[in-house]
Image (cartoon, rainbow, N blue to C red; front, side, top):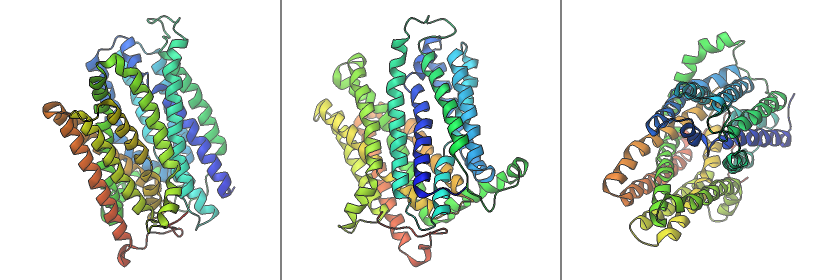
Length: 440
C-alpha cells in the first residue's frame, strides 16, 4: 500500500503525538516516584545514570536494527518495552525493581529514537521522489514538543487528583502517571501496528536472524558515513555542541531561578511555568521553520542550513542573557527572557538539519544516521553535565553560561561550514532519492 503525501504526514504526526504524550506523562514525576518509594538521592542518581548509559550503548545498534529489521517492527518492539517499563515502575517497591524498569525504559527509548521519522521520509520518497521534507519534519518536531509538554502538565497534576491512594501501598499517587503512560503506550502500539504501513525496502534482510547477523556491519557503515561525509561530520559536531548547551540549561536554570527568587519553594511554580513555555517555544520554533525559510529566501537566506545557522546563533544570545542575570544584571526577568528565547530558537534548526541529513543517505542507512545524531547529542550532554556544570559550581554560574554560549556559537559556525561544503562541486551530490529544495 502506497500512501499519499497527505496521508503520510497525517499518520506521522498522529503517531508522534501519541508516542511523546505517553513519555511526557512520566517526565515530571519519575524522580518523585523514586523518592516516594524510599530511594535516597544517590540511588536516584545511579538509576538516572543507568538510563543514560544504556541509551548511549544501545543508540547505534537500535538505529541500525531499524534499517535492517524494518521501521514498523522496531517501533512495535520499542512500545512493548516502554509499556512493560511503565507498568513495572507503577508497582515497583525496591531499588532493583526500579533498575529493571529503567533498563526496559532505556531499551524502549533507544529503539524508538529514529524509526518513525525514517518511516515518514521513506514513505514520502516512495510517493514522490522530489517532494520537500521540510514541512512534515518541522511539524513532526513541533508535535513531539507539544506532546511532551501536554503530557508533562497532565502527569504533574495527576498525583494531586489521586492523593487518597496510600503513599506506601502497591499503587501510590505517583504511580498513576506511570499507569497512564502504559495505557497510552498500548494505544500507541496499536496505532503503529495499524497505520505504519511500511513501503517495500530494496535491501532489507529476509528475517530477524539475518538482520542480527548484518547488525555489526550496519553499525560500522553508519559510523563510516558520519566520519567520511564532511557535511554529516560537521552537522554531527554541531549536534554535540547543542547537546552541551541544552544540558547546561536544564541543570543550571532551575538552580539559578531558585537563587534569584529566594529559594526552591518560590522558584518551583515559576520554573514549572517556564518549563511549559520552553516546550511550547520549541514547538513554535520547529513549526515555524519552513516559514522562516520562505522569509529568509527574500534576504538570500533560503537555504535551510543558513536559517539553521542564524537561529543557532540566536540561541547563544538567549544563553548570554542567562549569563548576565547570573552576574547580577537584570535579575529574574532577564533570566526568564533568555531562557524562553533560547528554547524558542533551538527548535528551529532541528528539522532543517534533519532535512539535509536525510537527503544525504539512502533508506538503507536512514535510521542508523538518526541514531548517530542522537548519540552525538547525548555525548555533548555528557560533557555538559560532567564538565560545564562542575565549572559553574567551582567558579560561578556566569562561567558555565559563557562556555554554553561559546559552544552554541561554535555550532552556528559548524553549520555555516557544512553549508559551504554543500556548495562545493565535490560535495554537492547529497540527493540519492530526489532533489532538495531550498524553499518549501
